[in-house]
Amino acid sequence: MSKRPTPCIVTSEEALRQEEIIKQLRNDNDLIKARTGKQKYYYISTFGCQMNAHDSEKLEGMLEQIGYMKAEEEEKADFIIYNTCCVRENAEQKVYGKLGYLKHLKDKNEDLIIAMCGCMMQQEEVLNTIRTKYKHVDIIFGTFNLYKMPELLQTYLETKRTVIDIWKEHKEIVEDLPSIRKHKFKASVNIMYGCNNFCTYCIVPYVRGRERSRKPEDILKEIEDLVADGVKEIMLLGQNVNSYGKTLEDKVTFAQLIRKVNEIEGLKRIRFMTSHPKDLSDELIEAMRDCDKVCKSLHLPFQAGSTKILKAMNRRYTKEQYLDLAKKIQREIPNIALTTDIIVGFPGETEEDFEDTLDIVRQVQFSGAYTFIYSKRTGTPAAVMEEQVPEEVSSRRFNKLQEVLRPIITEKSQALHGKTLEILVEDLSKNDEKLLTGRTESGHLVHFEGDSSLIGEFINVEITEAKTYYLIGQRV
Ligand code: SAH
Ligand code: SF4
Ligand code: F3S
Image 1: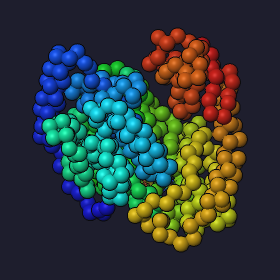
Image 2: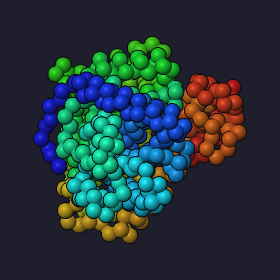
Image 3: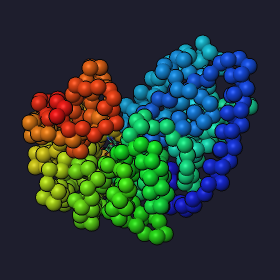
Image 4: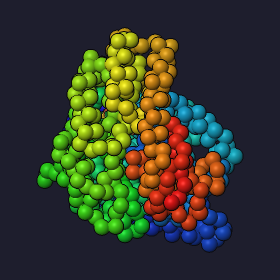
């Protein structure tokens, strides 16, 4: 776990090397297919955040170039990858739970290849556990060398011995990786990697390394290419997008970047996450207000309401500063939908501290919130803090928080009743195949009756019913 700054060298030499290996693997696969008629399939399970989901899209891109096709079911796959998360204990438990099941699949099919990657693998204890207790895992890599997957696969195929390649830190940003996106019309784009904030509860800076930004020209080129390929909505990704550009030689701010992205012709919507309140500038608020393509919705985690707890969390803002910022944003950008992340039960949190959290919830009136019970992460400063909050106290506060949040979110949702809103149609509804699902600019989910040919289109719907977590609409 290193806190040292790392150099930011951009090279495509590595990408070229992997491209060469991809070609060789593709040839081998084609030969096998010609000889046996057998097509190879992959299956990727992704745990964790959008960053991981986007990494999985890159893995898929490389695998399809190698000649693998996506398996509908894990049982049918020849190559299974688990892209893991360790932000909270339950994320890790899920992975360990499923690893046992993989052993059963491997027992049935000895040619099955199993790989593990992602944030969990960057922790030494986890690596040791997998090496000793889960010997059926064939390939292990981490977050800093994802692009090397083809080479690691090739080594495994040649040696049939476990391949482990974990880097302690980032070496270079490898551009131009192929990527398969879930939807043709929307895509995620990394604008930066890593995090320098070291919130005391959080493992991310240790497993994702130091903050480094991609050059604006590389980001713009990627978005232009995506738009040419049919993308209408993009999500700019970073752990702390508001500090974008600080590590670049030619300094650029996040606000300047989104103004440039806003000029890309053919692009319709721009979203971004995550914003850290301490770095959210007036310049960004102005850019959000001015840029017509930037969705008027903002995810602004506050984590805890008490200034004492915020200090212990190393968040670097007070309760009053957060409230002032949220109210300023709501004043400057009317109708903006604010969403947030909240942790309850951080070490030392008293009833009074928790009341401050509820107070922020009541004052800001969020449109949505992700809520978490504090989870102790070995290696972080909070893990060794005294006054860890007992489980039953955290659970009670968690339930109370839901009680306070629910009516607020419902009310925000109901305020949209009767309105006509533009949505981007995304999919068939998961629960009812007769319904389609789209998202409003504010990020609200809308179900409506329509034909699947509308998927990927912007249409207007009138909201006829408003539930807490979704809306029902009618095409107009
Ligand atoms: N970079 C983003 C979010 C990263 S993790 C940000 O700073 O907002 C996503 C969320 O997981 C965090 O916002 C936080 O609410 C939650 N989280 C992170 N570590 C946690 C922990 N140890 N226990 C409980 N929740 C945690
Ligand atoms: Fe974790 Fe804080 Fe960085 Fe977000 S800003 S990834 S919560 S350390
Ligand atoms: Fe999890 Fe890693 Fe994201 S720890 S939340 S997948 S950055």
